[in-house]
Length: 400
Image (cartoon, rainbow, N blue to C red; front, side, top):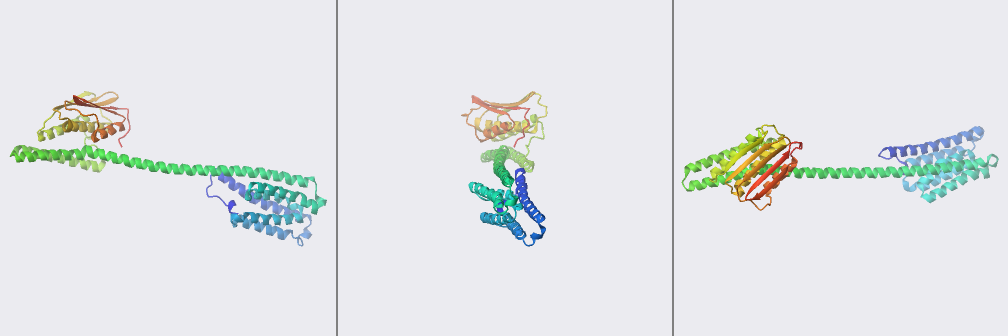
């Protein structure tokens, strides 16, 4: 029958069930052949005229066809034919009584619980008392007691089998749920990684190309104003500044496309900070809005820093100074870079107007950068603004 077919998944419990089913079929064949052998051994001469041999062949063929080809919905009918043929053999000789054992297992598996148990009791009664009626000369109390013990063992084996089957099914369900959960988690992580990558690219573009283009736009407007006033010398200086900013941003964009690296990581952090300050000074000078910016160093600033930490420090200086000249309208700013034993700090202090405390896109992006290396960002505003970045040197986490 199809319910006896080999399962596709051979986990340990399912493998046990396969062996049990194979053992059931093998037991049926051995007990049937053993009955035939004992019947033939008792009186070889009568085997040719006896219906035993045709009944054995019919029972074996029916059993084989049912276990291999017959659909599950025909299982009760198949079992009924098998039982009828077995009853015929029991009527011929008591030697076939012991086929009761696999038949009891089949009845319990094919039929509903109570119908199966009732059928098992009927099968035992046939095995115990049909020989008494037809072959009383060879019957004894053991002829009823032996099949009874075999029937009880068959029932116990069946319920053990069913428990194992339920456990195997539960394990398969759990495995399927785990696979589904794992697939869902992988999809979620993929989406989270994609969104994180988008956010990272957005920050990189804001801190590089966008700021450069903004500077070019502002200085170009200043150059146009100078030309309209007839101040060709100032306009020339401003156009030179535009060219320098454009060249720097072109190189930066090329580096960004090539390997998404920070533009200043080939330098020491103090040199990179000086470059940032020089560019801001040049742009503000070209705009006619000069700002005094100084750099102060403290601690072991010559110490080599982890690349992610150095990158964040440089970006923090860029963003803070951009806010100083764009929003604070400050005339002076002080950048302090310090490297201590287990901490790196960057302070940017200005004397500008301050702000209402709400972070814009740049500060939100900077906050995310700093958090990515387990650092802290604090912004104090009032009479002027102070941006404080503190990063522990114990952090080994890379930026996304």
